[in-house]
Amino acid sequence: MIMGILNKKFTIMDPVDEFKSERKKDIDDMYLDKELKKKSLDWMIHADRYKYTYNYTWLGRPIIKYPNDMVVMQELIWEIKPDLIIETGIAHGGSIIFSASMLELIGARDSEVLAIDIDIRKHNRVEIEKHPLFKRICLVEGSSISSEVIQKVKSVASRHKVVMVILDSLHTHEHVLKELELYTPFVSKGSYIIVPDTFIQFFPKGYYSNRPWDVGNNPFTALKEFLSKNEDFKVDLEICKKAMITEAIDGYVKRIK
Image 1 (tube, rainbow, N blue to C red):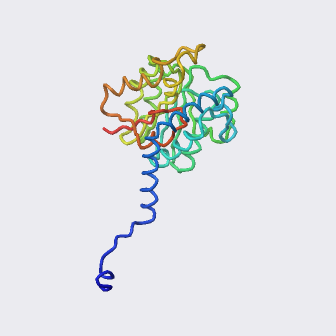
Image 2 (tube, rainbow, N blue to C red):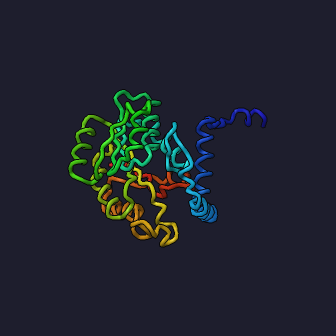
Image 3 (spheres, rainbow, N blue to C red):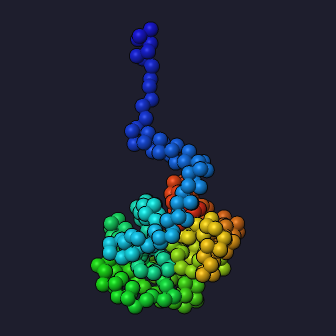
């Protein structure tokens, strides 16, 4: 009897695979937790009273993001190893410095960040241009949807193989939908287009009374319309499930074709 037991083959899971399997189960269970989702959204709305996302910097520049999204972004950049990251919307420059720092870390030679904004304020430009990581950044001033800017993007993108895009400029449905139509062709297969500020759809209606966007008119609604007509892209739920406190609810979108 003892010999029979000893002769049985036991499958021992690799500890790395075991950790990943346990983590996936926890993430899947967490995603189904409606109470936690509500608490997370309530927390975001409460924290926004104090402009929570304005309270962090990345390598010296203000980065208007939740820390969760910064961690998710570094995971994606490490996995995909893009040699071009296109960002619409610059603000204080923290996000483009973050992207440039990740490109620096992964050591991709000649990799760069192409950053576009309709109004690059002088004081922000000065700080960005004197930053040591500016060597990896190309600034373009102009509307992200203008034909002149798109021609510049095409010129830069033609020099690169793996391209990721982040759309974080004007948050109206019309503008984001146009950006999606114009910028998705640049995204490499297996790479991502990231659409921040989709959380606007889940904040109270009228919350942004001084802005041109609201519930029903925001990046989330634009993304849903775009995806309903385009089968080349799909929301990566495995990424979106775990963020919880995030500006990009269902906003991490992978090119699958």
